[in-house]
Length: 154
Image (cartoon, rainbow, N blue to C red; front, top):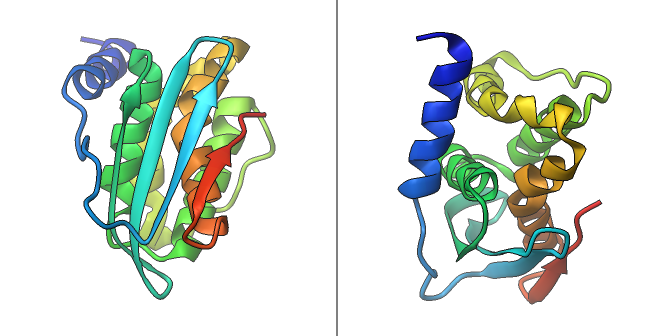
């Protein structure tokens, strides 16, 4: 099996069996995201303790890429700080859009590399929005101050 097939298998697994796929009973923050181009919809729920992400989950419907990205995001961000999340999203976004590389500190390298399996979407510009939707909803939740917020895809 080559690396591309392995990446595809991981994306399909997360798409079919998403991790942390549930509404959180009492989130401190949440936001809805919608990609009108393909109809993907996601709600990201957060439980923050100061600057630390104690818990993160999502629900919604979308393509395998959108669902896999949200699933991976929730696995990676649990227990991280908001600063860690900002760095990881910056690096991920740069990778999927073909932007300038973002430096990732050594302690986040493994998490950043887990997201690399989604970087193939950069060759399909319409799919970039699928891969980044949950991350934009996460940002909207954080910056919404605990209130319901709406995410925008670029």
